[in-house]
Each structure stands twice: as structure tokens, then as C-alpha cells.
Amino acid sequence: VQDWDVDIVSQIVNTKNEMAVVTNYLSSVSGSIDSVTGRSLRVARQVLCNAAYEGSGPDRRLRHDAQSQPEALSPIHGSPALQPYWASGFSFSRGHFILRVPYDPYLPMVTKQDEEISMALRAFTHGYDFYTPERSVCFNTANDNPSAERKSFLQHKHLYTGQETASL
Image (cartoon, rainbow, N blue to C red; front, side):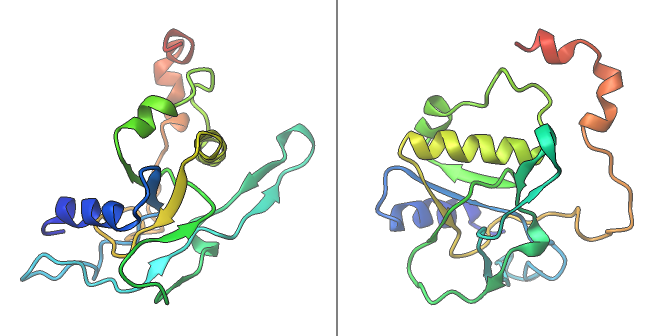
């Protein structure tokens, strides 16, 4: 997106919150960027607010996925809107966020859902607030061909035997 960096920095400033984290799942790039101006064509924004438990016993965990999140025009204008969760797909904040709430080195090769809940809980207890962007500045190609099989890092972990413990 043309001038994405200026746009996202202005969105952070517009929150008037030093502890703001603008975060969200990424929408598909298809039809999202004007081919002439390079500007985002997306006017709706997704809000991460739906969550449910999945699994049972010790494997039971909180999960929220992109398909279950509402996406609509926001009644709030001039600033990103507060939301309850942190998303691993896109996260933008002041640099102190990653210094104060680094990725947990004791959770190597953690799943996306576990990463999101871990970061959200630790960031919130450090005083950070999560916002959905007012305007999308970043998009994803992964949603463009849902039938294509994409392997995750975890599905290739046999290629990196021992790396998860070596990274600690």
C-alpha cells in the first residue's frame, strides 16, 4: 500500500495511547489495492472479538479465527478502535512493546492460537491496549487460493530437529 508506513504511524498517534498496539488478521490482497494509486480500497475493518474454546482436557484452549470475526464499517472515525485480542498476522506498535513483552523463549514452535493468547495476556498485564486498524495497510496472499496446501513451519519441524531446544 502506498505510504503504508506514514498511515500506520498516524493511526498509532491517533489512539493518543503510548501503549497502543494496532493488530489484526490480514485480509486478502485480491481487490484490496488500487492499481493506479497504490492506495487501499478496503473501507471495512475486522474486529477481533469472537473466541471459543476448542479441544478437551489438557488440550483445551481458547481460539479465535479470521472467519469468525466481524468485518464492517466502523462507527468510530479518526482513530483505530479498541479490541480485546492480539493477532499474530499483523501487529504494529512502538518499539518498547517487543522489549517489554518479547516472544516467550520457553514456548518454542508454539501454535498460532497459543502464541496469540500468550502475547495478549502478557501484553495486557504490561498495560498494552489492542486496536483494530482504522484502515488496512497490509494484506495477505494466503487467502487467495484456499484450496492450495500451505505447510506451516511446524509441519516442517522434522527438518529442524533440535532447533526448538537450541533456540532456548
